[in-house]
Length: 386
Image (cartoon, rainbow, N blue to C red; front, side, top):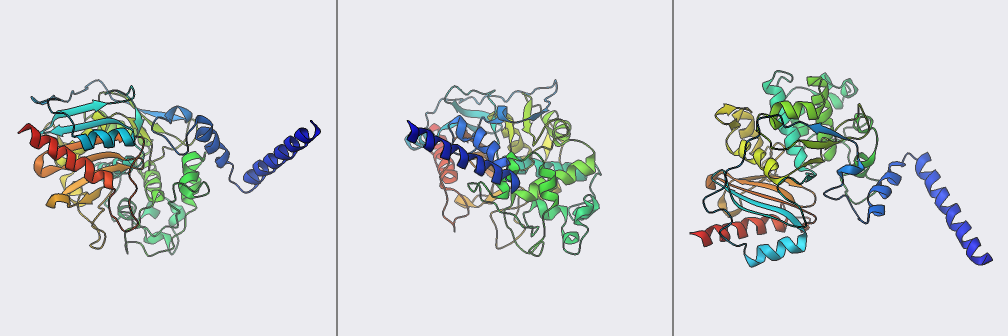
């Protein structure tokens, strides 16, 4: 009994010391991460974790528009490979939208067309769309306006070189650790920290801006802060006014915050919505910024966003992933657990996938293997219908 008490005492003392060190070294957010993730039975962020955080509502308005159903709606079964892939990777929503009508739709694990799940980094594309809208609205001059015009903290010899377009195209040269699974990386910090504004305002420039593509979540958080300053509005409010209401979203959405009340949206991540509403951004970009014959977003901005900025990094434009798979011009939104809105304009095709897991890519690969699977199997299904 004494031995058990002694072991327990040593364990508690060690735990107290670890907690003290985390607090003293400014890593107390790790404790929050442990509570949210591991104590809920997960090993990383998960698709329905929004109740664990403060959120701000993205209001949908009163003009909800329904996606029409295709005349062949759900008449073709998924291929065996798609069925197995979706089961193995925990897909909870899979949509195929053909000619602006839902051609195939399937949900799993109790999720349905109204279920909210985490966008993860698909939010980067949406934040970039807000940049385009802010330029349309006159809040920002153009993609070449200096970040320092809005954030004086960057009025330094190195920081003054960064333009708002560099943030959207992932070419700022900022010092940022993008490791998703290192609890001490900046990406982990901003997921659980209570003041992400402070984190990004302290960033330094270590590489020449506009020299090369380097995917950094800190870019989009900083872009979100620029948008806050430029518009004088919370990102959720501006998103509601700019897109959620004009696009006729059916449901209110939620955007995770770092803290209560005046907290900031995690601009790089974490919009909780459903597959049908996420798909509307695919349609908006496919249709060059028009919705119901109204120009919602400048077509010139979309043209730039959907083409590479750097010839040696053809996989990324401004806020969008790009591919020439099957010799087609493809662009897509992507989240870390395999959230996708894949758009293939020449075939008037949109593929949406939401779920728990993804297939990791090799270091030299531009796109994940599941991206190709979803496209291949969708075309097989379409061919089976003809």
